[in-house]
Image (tube, rainbow, N blue to C red; front, side, top):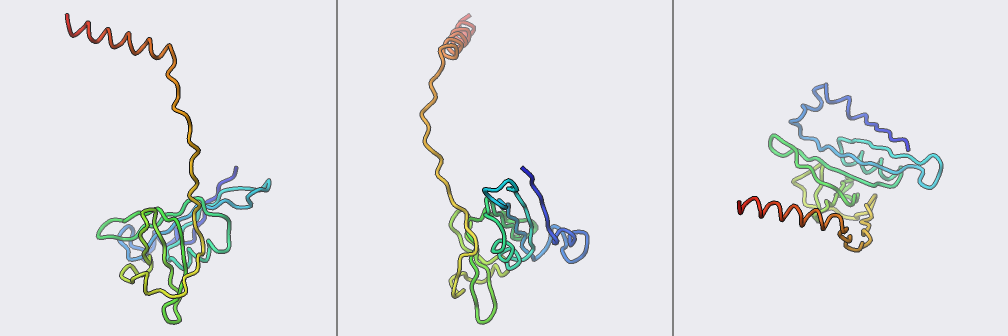
Length: 161
């Protein structure tokens, strides 16, 4: 499987457009499965420094398998796993609302904006939370049981002496 990573936002790190790591811009990244079900299937990871750019890229490309958002907080980053990305409107302006793995909704481009004030929300991308199949409890082998009992006996006899 081929994995590629691309971002036009990375070139901004050495410039003053993003004062790394102190910045006012969010940092969003996603890993997508491209061309699923074909011999050309591959993973692609991309980064964006605006939520609208992030949503546009997700809308046009493959199926997301992981999404992450870093929002500047004081002198560090508040990193959150994302499960869905919506786009809506406030007046005539497009606004992106994301939901993290804990169920919190926020607007990465405008952290002070309440997501409930965004109208006409449309789902752009979402992760499918797949349930792991339940597996039986593994049986303890006879060799492991004998080893455990021998180690336990050696420990108790050493403490008695």
